[in-house]
Image (tube, rainbow, N blue to C red; front, side, top):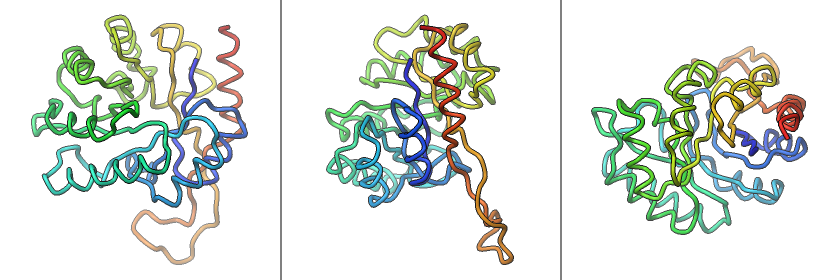
Length: 238
C-alpha cells in the first residue's frame, strides 16, 4: 500500500519523511486545494525526502478551466520543475462543462515527458467518471487522485470501488478525509492500493494583525504521529 502525503510546507515534508511515507505531493495553499510550490521549496523537499516527490502544477485557485496564457504558464512550470529531479507531475484541466479538457491535459502530459502524471481532484467534478477514467488511460495518465466525487473518500467509496475494478492501466489514488479510523474500511472496501492525505493540524501563533482575510497567524502542518498511525493501520493488512 502506498501512502502519499500532501505537503504544503517544509515542516510537513520533514514530518512525512520521518514518519516513513512512500511519496509526497508538494504544493502550497492546501486551504484552496493546493497551488504550485516555489522552486526553492521543491529543491529542498527533494534533498530531504529521498523517495518520490510529486509536484502540483496549478497556477491559481478556483476552477480548472485555463486560458491559453495560463496553460503556457503551467507548461513553463513543468519544464522548470523537471530540471529539479522531481518524481512526478500532478495536474489537469477541464472544459467549461466540467468534462476533461483532453487537448490541454495532453499538452501537460507531453510536457511531463517520462515523469508519471497524476490527474488531480478536478476529476471529482466531471459528469461521467467512468468515461473520464478511460479517456485518461488513453492519454497515458498513471493515476487519478479522487474522493469518489464526494466530500471525502469514505462517502465516495462506491465510486472508488467501481473505478478500481474498471481500471486497466491507471491507479486510483483515494484521497480526502482519510484518517487512522477509516483508512482500513476505505482500502478494504474499494481495493485501492494507494491513499492520499494531508494529516494536517494547526500550529503557529495567533496574529494580532491580519495579513489577509483568512490570516489568523496559524498554519497547517502534516502531523508525523498521524502519518505513523495510518501506516501502522495499513501494515495490519499485510
